[in-house]
Length: 285
Image (cartoon, rainbow, N blue to C red; front, side, top):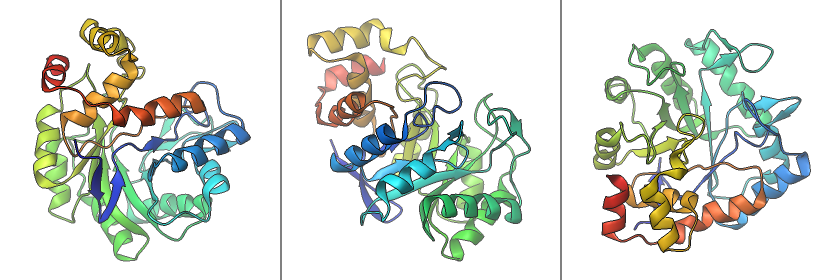
């Protein structure tokens, strides 16, 4: 099983870290500042070099970007920060507002990320499209062309897409190279299986959100076959579910999030679990 992947020209460990839960966005318990800093620094110590964030990951005065800057700036060489732009929210932080699509709108959103992260260039920027009803399948030419323009100005390292269909990927590839696709994929939701394989063949990273089911598949970790494999190995279902994703395809890059150091250690350690071909197949089925 490959342990790293070429993400837009930088080799990164396939086990990364997602920061959405640090400020408790959109709902949930937020980490206090010291705990958030501890988790981020420990993630880097454990070899994590791909950290996913977004400007709108904020709640009650706390934001993922600020936590990242305070804990890790100046950033270590080789650390890829990945953000997403496009979505906008009302003052409550949860209610969707009109998304950013034009060059001016996306520039403002990118500049907000640059300022908060304390950097003049972000390694990976994902264009997040659509809502919560499934992958976006509309016209993405204008916003992706805008993102490519911002990349040409040196503000972005690599370009990615989030919450999209293969049709939208084709639109984007006609404009500029795509480094990653970030969609929903896990043991309980394998509807993107062919998309994962297509990205693998093209050398495009696939970053599954909700790798442990999330609120969309809250019972995933209770699936009988997953529980059986975990019990046979004296492991937790969560660690087996993460290990399965790493075995499923060499381009899958994981960004499980947590607000506790213990869960961080467990998640990152799942990369050391070697599953047999029979176990991988049984779980896939």
